[in-house]
Every structure is written in structure tokens, then in C-alpha cells.
Amino acid sequence: MKLHEYQSKFRFAEFDIPIPQGKIATTPEQAYAIADEIGGPVVVKAQVLVGGRGKAGGVKLAKTPDEAMQQAQAILGMDIKGLEVTKVLIDPAAEIVDEVYLGITTDRAARRTVLIASGEGGVDIEEVAATTPEKIVKMHIDPFLGIRRYQTHDIANRVGIHRENWKEFYQIAKGLYDCVLASDATLAEINPLVLTGEGTLLAVDGKMVIDDNALNRQPELAAQRDTSDEPEAETKARESHLSYIKLDGEIGCMVNGAGLAMATMDVVKLYGGTPANFLDIGGGAKAETVATALEIILSDPNVKAVLFNIFGGITRCDEVAKGILAALEEVKPDVPMIARLVGTNEKEGRELLAEAKMITAETLSEAAKLAVQAAQSA
Ligand code: GDP
Ligand code: MN
Image (tube, rainbow, N blue to C red; front, side):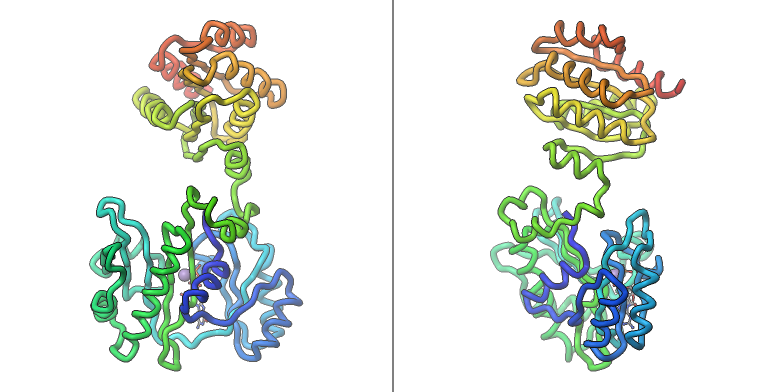
């Protein structure tokens, strides 16, 4: 789960990371009032869950409350990478002397938390990693020792932070690390961390991703979820306990079991198709869940064929078939659907689907071939 910039920064502040003392506005009038209260130049910042807002025109400087109101008027309602801006953060503008990147994430291969920094702050870190990887500094953190002062001094030195700011930099990196641990975050980043005109460090932008699997023990963070920024299909999938990830292909896949879903996607590719999604309906799915899953798959306009691959164990094939039939009554799909059902109650399941004139297959390769053909001739 992603947190907004303001949510991330307010959280950072709880760990003594210095942030601009800004507030959220949802109307131009509120933006005026906040800017008036701040009293100097401000930045008006679109709160959407994507990066690169600055380049997209979602971050603007305003010298007066009137200007802040105008900028908020322009930014609110704006479309940034497909997301509508409904909130703006009004921060006191910082005088920026230098910008660095500072982030913490998990390095799965190293089985360690890793501190990442770069002197190329402010810009897209993925781009820096792709074009000038030597400008990115990484340091693993020992889980038993925690973050050490010599580590942050070394990093500060390598990204060009002057010695006067090393103590502050240590406190910020330590705060970020504590914040990551306390929040079950898989990513926390400050980009840019700026050196201000006053010679101090300030976290001007913030981003956090919380591990979805930990949300049950992070009720405070879970409550901050903004579903308005989430594709509708994903909200629906989450609420129905389906594991759904949208992909770019044209063959919708409905599978029970994550491993089977991966294998199904591979087989689709083997026969020259591309999967439109990863979808695991889980074990023991009932008809209702199957219906929701099918609605989600069909809501993707790229889908040209749907492939069901169900291995009936705890999940009963007739239960899945009933779900498919129930869904067909509500959403009238105009794409071909191919089903491979094997295992518990497969015979009953196939009979139900045959009545609905669906294409059924005995093996996965047969089903995948049929789905690829169907999608290609669509
Ligand atoms: P992003 O584009 O979504 O990453 O949004 P940021 O919050 O990082 O803002 C983009 C850029 O706007 C930053 O890299 C800064 O160069 C600039 N910016 C943001 N806040 C301020 C500020 O308070 N003062 C000044 N002068 N520039 C700012
Ligand atoms: Mn940024």
C-alpha cells in the first residue's frame, strides 16, 4: 500500500525527520488560508500516488496567498498519469541549495535492509539507476547492529554532503530506518532531501510503501489508504480477497493457486499469447468470488479471450462453474472463454459449462492454445 507524500512526511516527522510545516487543502480557498497562515512563499503540491509530479506540472511555487489559490485552482482536478488530483499539500517553500536522494528498502537477495543514496537528488531515481548507476550508493544494514554512524558518514561523504551536516544526516537516516521498521514499510524515500539556504537538511518530498501483509498490525496506516487513487479493479479484488495484478496482455487468466497462475501465464506465453493479468482466486473459492473475479477480468478492455485453469482440490469444479455461470448472467462478455477444469467434481463442472456453450479443454496446453487462437482471431 502506497502512502501519499503528506502522509509519508507526517509519519517521518514522528521520527524526528525535519519536514516543511505544511497542510492539506482540498479547495483553492483552503489553499489561500494555509498560505496566508504560513506567511511567505509556498509550494502547492498535487497529492497523487505517482512520482514525477513536478515534471507533470503538479508542483508549483506561489509567492502570495492569491497565487497559491490560483495554483491550487489549476492543480486540483488535474489529471496526472491517469489519476485525478483531489488534494494539494501547501508547504512553506524551501530555498534549495542542493538536492540528494535518500531511500531505504529491502534487498531480498542480500536478505538485508539497504540504504540507498545519490547526489543526483530530485530527479527520477530509476532513471539515474539506468543511465548512471555509479552515482547511486548502497549500504546494507545489519539487523542486529542497526544503522551505524560510520555508515551514514561514509554515504554523506560519497553523495557530497558537507561535514557540517553529517550529524543531521545521521539522524535523518536513523529516523528513516526506525520509521521503516516501525511501519512495516517495504520502501521509504526522501527525494529530494535538500540542503536549504539556512544550511540545514530538510525532507521536501516523501514516499512510503507499506507491506500489505503487515496491515493487520498497522491499523493506523491501513486507515490512511486512499482507494480513490487505486484502479477500481484492484480495490474490488482486494475486498474479495483475490490476488490480482493487471498486466498488458490480451488473455485474461483465472486460476486457483499462485503457482498454478504463474505456470498458466508461462504456458500462455509458450503458445505465443500474453497474459492480461495474474489472478489467483485462492483455495475453496465460492461461486460469488468467481463471479467477482470474472467481472474484474472483463473490465479490462484489452482482454480478447479468457482462460480458466482450475485444479479442483479443496476448490470444487462445479462451484467454480456455477460462479462462471452466475457472472455470465450479469456481465455479458463478448469474448471467447476457454475452461480447463480438472479434479474434484470436474465432470459436474464441465457439464454445467457445456450447457453455457463454453469451450472446455482437457489439458492446460490444449486450453492455452485455444485461448491464444481465440485472442488472435478476435
Ligand atoms: P515529484 O516531482 O513528484 O518527485 O515532487 P517533488 O516534491 O520532489 O518536487 C519536484 C521538484 O520541485 C523538487 O525536486 C524541487 O526541485 C522542486 N521543489 C519542491 N519543493 C520545493 C520548495 O519548497 N522550494 C523549491 N525551490 N523547489 C521545490
Ligand atoms: Mn520527488
